[in-house]
Length: 472
Image (cartoon, rainbow, N blue to C red; front, side, top):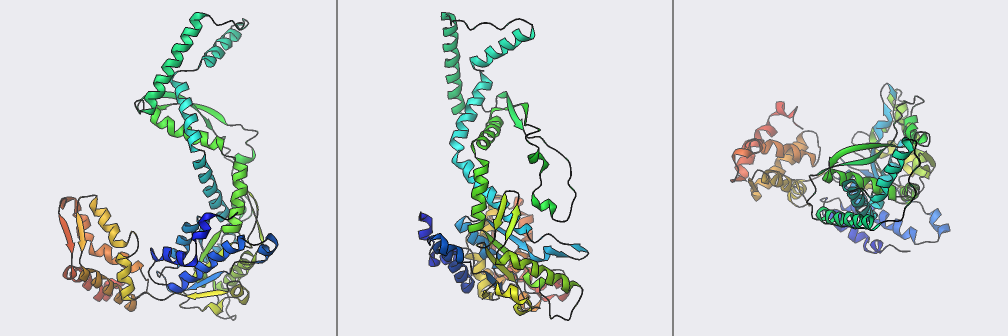
């Protein structure tokens, strides 16, 4: 069955969505848009054909701070797909073996499980709210059956046989009607929020904790060995009574009831399938594990080892997780790196072949930096305006100020290390340092940032070579 949302995810619509958050980089946006649309197309094919069509993994090449990670992250948000970002350097550390390469797939599955469980909890939210309300009312005025059970227990404890079930008298019926009437009044007060501060005693479940550490080979902790879960049948959940306000009790009981209503086994299986079919893994800093030629030794050996460990994962293999085995054949891998010292051709040929689409991302120009300040949703200038508005300070920027900030940022990127759009964060913090420090005293006033102020605050920093050593 075709998902109605898929119809709207045309390549043009995907690029338009990415344009709202990322300035420029049209080639990269088109590449990921086509890769995403091909996933949708594959789902419409017969199963036998669909199995043969593998995703065309992408290698993004470009300096830091130009939008590589942001493109992949926004893409995953658009399609609500499981997404993780890993750094290739995590898998090789000086002095000891880094993380198991397969751990990236286990992390992806964990993310997928969280997403599916959260969605399923939202689906049963209404029922959970209703059940939690009944439990709060039971705490406020216990039902008759509970009172009778307490009475029977007291008889048993005293050695006397429990009372035989008697025919309710008129007085019993009158008491029951009164109890139900009181319960309905309390229900109405609960709905109106009049009992939020009232304290009640509730009983909640507590999972048994088995604090036994597991020692083993590297990567064993990634397998999800959890003794608490393994021994849950031997150590059942404990009940704990707590005295809390109705407001706190509602949140705790709603969460507990939602957990009971969710079929966790079915959620785990759905999450496995979602990770296999829709998962996106973003591997950053891939150039840091590239080797310049084959005549080197030392760290380069480790780097090439990481690349060869990545090969089966990217090509397609089975990875065991705590929820079951996962095939990586149809997971989309997007790799990225600056490649300013190395070249993509320095990667082992097999890995290059598994990243068939190569996209060059352009360094950010002065015009791009100016657009980044104002155009994206929740842009950098909008963020600072929102922060200072909490102190009742109206922050404004002239067009000249925006141009000057972009110009100085571009100059620093040219003359020192090029860190792309991240340079703007440094510039803005230095520019607005005094305004942010004195904001509480400027309450109710307007703080205007113009060209002369930008030059006064930032030109000295840009020109001073000694300061540049410490300023990113």
